[in-house]
Length: 337
Ligand SMILES: NC(=O)C1=CN([C@@H]2O[C@H](COP(=O)(O)OP(=O)(O)OC[C@H]3O[C@@H](n4cnc5c(N)ncnc54)[C@H](OP(=O)(O)O)[C@@H]3O)[C@@H](O)[C@H]2O)C=CC1
Ligand SMILES: CC(C)CCC[C@@H](C)[C@H]1CC[C@H]2C3=C(CC[C@]12C)[C@@]1(C)CCC(=O)C[C@@H]1CC3
Image (cartoon, rainbow, N blue to C red; front, top):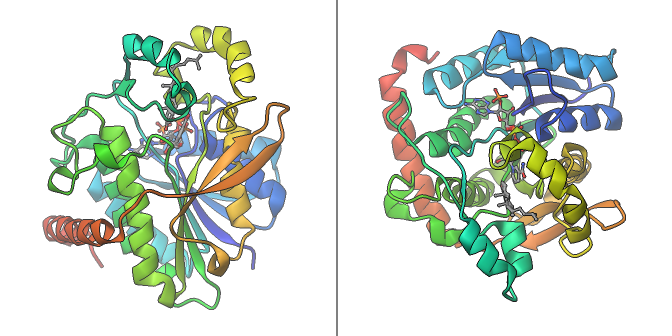
C-alpha cells in the first residue's frame, strides 16, 4: 500500500500558488503511489484543488475532506469521517495558516534598513508587522484557533490512526521565522491582548511540536516543524498588493544572495516539507526547525536551526491545551463516537 497522507492548507480559488498545493505536487513527484487526502474548507474548494493536482498528476489518488480549522465542530466531524475512511495515516501536514489584517510599520522598516539588523528584520519581520485578531464562532481568538488549536484537536482526534502502527507516523507543522518567544505568553496563550497573534501562534506551534514528541515518540508518532521562508502566496498578497511585490521582485532576488530564506516561490518553500518526507524520524532533532532555503543562484536546500523553546513552558502550555480540549469535547459531545 502506498503512503496515506492527509494534507491541509492547499491553495484553492483556482490559482496555482500556495505552499500546500506545491507540496502536494512535489510529494507526488517523489512517490506517485501515495494517497493524498486534502482538507479544504468546502466542497467547491476541495474539488478545485483536486482538479489542480490531477491536472499535473492525472494518475494520482486524491481524496478530499471538508474541514474548517477555525470551526471546532467542523474539525470533529472531519476527524470522525477520517477515522471511518482510514486505518492509519503516515503523514499529516499541518500547513493551514492565516494572518488577518496584516499591517507593516513602514517607519520601523525604513529605520531598520539603516541598522546592522536589516537582514534579521527582512527575514523574520521582527518589529515591523502587527495584526488585528478577533474572536471566532467558538469564542476563541481566530489566529490561535486556526493556526494551532484546530490542528491540535485534529491530531488528538486522529491519535488512533497515528499511534501504535508498524511504521512511525509523522506530523509536519508549518511554522514561521516570525515565531517569537517574546510574542507568546502562557497567561495569554491565545494572544487576546497583543497585536502579534501570528507570531504568537507560530511560537505556540513550535512548543506544541516539541511537547508532542515528548509525549508520543514511544508510541511511534513523531512531530517536526518547518519554515517555508518568504513565499509569494495569498498570504503575502494580503500584506502588500501583487503589483508591488512584482515591482519588488528584482530587489528580492538580490536580497536572496544574503537571505537564503527568501524562497519566494511555493515550490521552493515546500523544500523542507519534502525533505522531511524522505527522512527517518528517529534521526531528527525535535528541538530543530527545518528551514526551506534557496541560494542566490536558485538552488534549494534545507537548513536545520535550533529553536528558541523552553521545554518546561512547552509542558505547561500542553496542559492548557488539554484543558481547552476537554471544554471543547464537553461542548461538542454529540459529535464524538
Ligand atoms: N507565505 C509566507 O511567506 C509564509 C507562510 N508560512 C506559513 O505557510 C503556511 C501556508 O501559507 P501560504 O501557502 O503562504 O498561504 P496561503 O494563504 O496561500 O495558504 C493558506 C492555506 O491555509 C488554508 N486555511 C486558512 N484558513 C483555514 C481554515 N480556517 N480552515 C482550513 N484551511 C484554512 C487556506 O485555505 P483557503 O484557500 O480556503 O483560504 C490556504 O489553503 C501557513 O501556515 C503560513 O503561516 C510561513 C512562513 C512564511
Ligand atoms: C524589499 C522588500 C523585501 C520589502 C518588503 C517588506 C516587508 C513587507 C517584508 C519584509 C519581511 C517580510 C516577512 C513576512 C511578510 C513580508 C515582510 C514583512 C512574513 C511575516 C510573512 C509570513 C511569515 O510567516 C514570515 C515572514 C517573515 C518575513
